[in-house]
Length: 295
Image 1 (cartoon, rainbow, N blue to C red):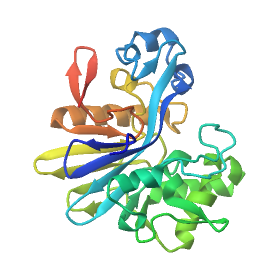
Image 2 (cartoon, one colour):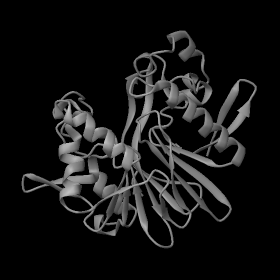
Image 3 (cartoon, one colour):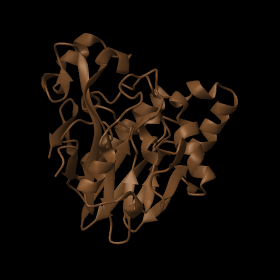
């Protein structure tokens, strides 16, 4: 098995394909309302797998989840993508990664993916929607229906109508979203859409206006694929800390608190899109609020 492919606990057969993982982002930059002293005092900041104390950098992962139900194979959040022009982010710019080889390590070809679900339309969640072919962008998964939330699509279309497209989400609409519409593979769905038996979208606004999560439920187990409702384990201890990328920080914090409460009360698995390896965790109540249990 590829070192970039990790099987995850929970309902159905779920795995994670890691595109990037490392200490990339200054903690004070991502969490502008937190002080360096409070950040360094968290339990997560004392775990070297989560925080680089020497440089005050957050260890984060950029990954997709693959969910195999009895009926279909679903890919949730498609990372940054190869060959994408992202000059404002050197970690993403013209990336040449092993994503499709890692997909193959799970026994899957692009043609095997039935559904692609983007929890929201930031550049690091839509990149592998498309691949470069003969100088143009074509759907990576030719047999898939790509699900985009109605509110999310409407929001970014409005932003694009009033902005320089190259500055909106690193220009990712043009190379990673619009080609899906042009190919006729896009389905614009409600934020509470049932995707399959035991696979349900849930509205989770705040990070973006149309942000969603994916709830999995089968065999008496539940898991929540939360996208960017929560970015880093530090936010388990401080759910009030929203990121600099959240469009509505207060609503983001409220959604995060509600999600952590639900996951703790249901003894469910939490599978965020940017938690470092091992990613999957259960959430417990603590005297200070919440704590995480790694798998």
